Image (cartoon, rainbow, N blue to C red):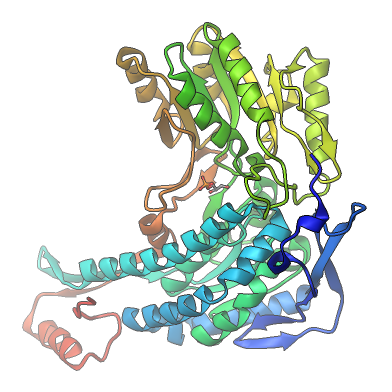
Length: 530
Ligand code: G3H
């Protein structure tokens, strides 16, 4: 599992650290001279293993956090702010200005994605490109939404001009596994719909925001986007405690989400957009095409080392094909190449959380104690920043690896005889994001599909679970999510329908006509954005 540090290509070497000494509040990149936190990569750049220092970020306190909140509230300005009242076309122009600048930062951000979270080069590039596409798709979708609303309706003698309006101030927190893409999947729709935002980058994947700070600063009016750094408990909690946040947008851990939600004193006004834990299962039926199934299960369990909320986190395999599946699957796992993110062909890469290998080891030990074995030769081998994926079999409900969302490289296989066994487990699970089902007999599949769609939010037929394409709804039942994200749905999640109504009489109609003719209102408009 060794990778030589001498193999780091020149363009990916860390020649200087990033000193992030500013934070963005009220349109100003404020200098910070207080405590700084070190940002390390678990990837070593020396022959003898040592984490690599990548830079420093400000450790802001409550005072700075509340300044950011104040700036966001002022920019919203009780609904009168420039941004929430701005014409759609002008908001779009700001977003376009931002994305044009963002595209010039691809190289820097991709390099930081690799160092900060250990994501391999092709996936880091994909994360960047997918995010740029997401922004352009959001702009197009917003134009469409605006076109759909560029009209008046009339029912029972009342005219209505209905649009989607912003909700207010959004606190936005993203996850470390997609620090750019998932964060922006919250941030971009929140901003474009006219909300003002306070955004705290994830703990890992924080320096990669540095190249974008100026673009945020110069693309949007002051206070629309505020970017702060520090510990969640120190900066996010006091913001929530004021009761002035209208939307908590968070992709990550339910513990943080619940704590933040609970610290808001006026919960009825708090809208939630949350993407939380999942334990997506795969069900492998007796007649499944094993070549295809194994390919998909490898990608599903181990892309980005299993650190995806959509990863397959437990495999249910029918006992009739178990022997062949286990053998072939384990061989395929062992054939995966471990390396640094820039190494050609590296599928398994260093884990960004220094304590993750120990945590995974704990899951393995617990399963072994309770009767499972490691099926693959390399399973559980460790180096300083990695633990090779162990294929654990047979796994049962008493084991921690069955109960916990491992979010890392370890694969539990649960044998089943009767399909009711996995179906009952899925029904009893606290999670309800997605499922993968492998098989081809329509008579068997049909009733399973009809039930599974009522237990999760996406049933993947003969393919692993995933979020994309981003135009499709991304959500979950039970403890897995609140609200729906997709290019279209996210615009809805960060807005509310609001309208102007007037009785159909000549007095009102003359006023409406004048409003339209003079274009005096940004809300009342039937202009059509092409
Ligand atoms: O961490 C959860 C992500 O939304 C997964 O997205 O399925 O595209 O990897 P993905």
